[in-house]
Amino acid sequence: MRKGPSLQNFILQIELLRAYRAAVRATRPLPDSHTRRETLDWLRSDIERLRGELDDEVIRSNLSTFRRNLKTFTPALGMSGLSGTGAKLIGQRR
Picture 1: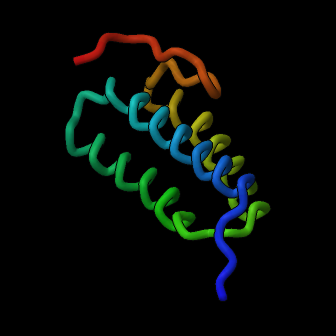
Picture 2 (picture 1 turned 30 degrees about the vertical axis):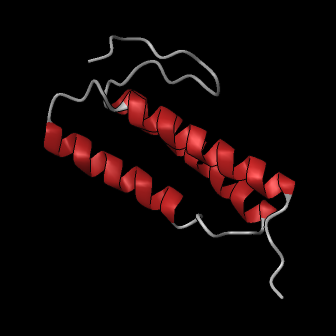
């Protein structure tokens, strides 16, 4: 019998989704739709491979790496408004 996800695993999965959603929002200022699509595909692939992961340490480690990469990556493209968890994004909704 396979053991299901723990409460901690569930919470970490939610944190992954939050990080991904923040990353998606942060790509809105990209002017080129092709570049935005490629960026979203790259971000999604990182999150997608952790979808069925049950090891909390693996998720925690990858979440940390994802956030660190995103913080490094966003200023390079001129994307603003992503300064951590729970922060309001700057800009207009289109």
